[in-house]
Length: 352
Image (cartoon, rainbow, N blue to C red; front, side, top):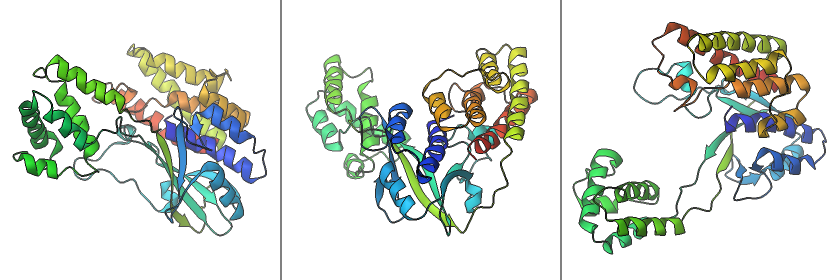
């Protein structure tokens, strides 16, 4: 379960409690336990900020207060399909299979819906990470001018522009520098840092750059954007079947565990074992941040299902289950797609 999905699930329960007149002191507990900053920015936490359709922004407490004033009944987890939206796949190239989609952002395309008296307001979450440094184009050019490797840096940056950056054709230095506006500065600084690591750069130049870089490391926190994006008159969703979703996830986990054991895929078989233990035996999950939040905000069965989902969600990018390079094996494809398909109904049912 990625950070966005964890935020969605936990906010569904917390917000619905608050809208129903729950204890506001739970906000402080949530902020401390979840790792999100919801009342003020904190350097060691991800800031949750709501972006309204009118361009205004708000922190969680202000957003909940406004929602209550609008007569909001509850916050629920639903899908983009309920808002008539569909996943926008990258232009060109072959279609992306479901199991591959797990490597891209919000893998289930789930969204939040704030139920108001006359409509349902869609809220989509996504992560924003600040650039690692606040160094600018001017800082880089100043450093280059004072460096004995100035000519090398010019040549290296033009090569990077021609082959990687594509700001210009990579043939004219003045044209290249003029093309670097505020929206391109972070990439330019990152590319220059890569050039500094080249063997042609002297040790003193290398050390001086990193000294400067360390002095300018970004102090901004990562931000979880909650963007209001659409409204519909209402959302007609069938009643959630917690037992059916749980059974489907259990079957998928049993199959993928058997496959992992048969292929001696460590530690994946242990991961699937742990998820099955939570589902089947009611084993207490390790009370990390996610499970502690689920344990307090949800009833026992939904909390247990959410913990199992967080363990079973092995899809992602580098180093994940779908990065094993076994796509030519039809059994791997079958068990992977079954597990992937079982995750979203389980998540939705637990949050219903």
